[in-house]
Length: 181
Image (spheres, rainbow, N blue to C red):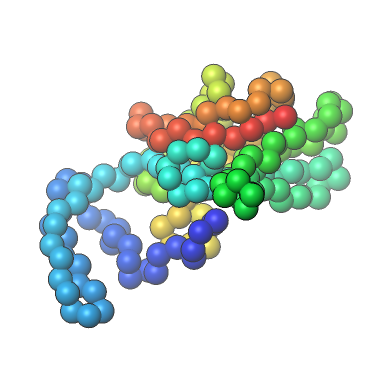
């Protein structure tokens, strides 16, 4: 979502392959062939980082649902050319207005999640708090990209920089960070 358009369909591993070690042969457009092996796992959660490092600020967005039903999309990071790095845009959970409070959903971009047996088998830990997952499956626009949506609880207000991890059927992802105002 932040870098490139994602792999072309023909660059993905075909569905239905058995887990384990697979022999791989890749031939580029110039006819040069490379061979190797690859360990295949149905579940291998990995969350994308904004800077493509696998750590640091999450490649994530926020969807704010207002009390009148309108939805506003927001970023969680921006690239600062002066620092030559991504910096956090703090997530504001909004003022408390009871049932009229904003509902703020975090959308994480990931891979290795869609083969989960049930969404209830996906957990997100934000800081020290486990938060129920609303959606965990294909992202829908980019081939091979998964997404995880979670409603951010108001208990996170004021936490600052927090670590986010995704757990799928007992396997944990790489930790990434978001900042919460």
